[in-house]
Amino acid sequence: MLIGVDGSSGSRRAVSFAARLKPPPGGRAIVVRVVEPVRLPSMGLLPASIRATVGAQATALQATRVRAARRDVETAVVQLEKSGWRARGEVGLGIPFDELLRVIKRSRADLLVLGARGVGRVEKFLLGSVAEAATKRSPISVLIVK
Image (cartoon, rainbow, N blue to C red; front, side, top):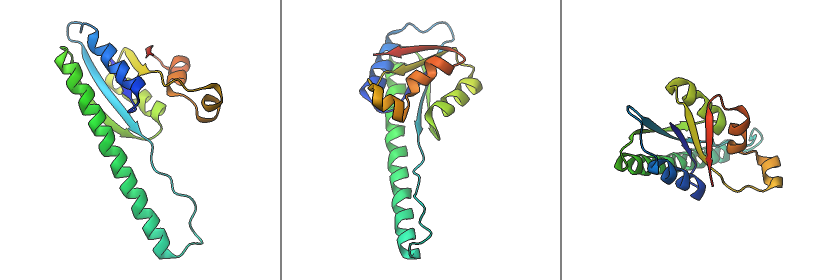
């Protein structure tokens, strides 16, 4: 079982739901959180000192996001282990659904568990939704927890 988390209350509910499931013999859970890379705007016309400052701030922001992701994953792994699952966690960097697909393939997971974020129609159209993409494009069964 692969559980995608993103720090939201929906993903915490998904972990809690999965923790209540009885692990099958040899069952394992992988908790994954994907951090989207910080993208810098084009800064070619800015002075080098400003580019360096903005670059350093972007690096610091990225490090903060990765630390938060690790905490989320570790918390979920502990919760799953307490309920009898063999669990491990991963933090990836990239586009969330694409990275989840890579982990699905690599780990040979047979179920993807995600939390619903309750994104509205306009936001879903503009921002996309990992849960919606999973229901349409996942090569394995998907469980969306509300």
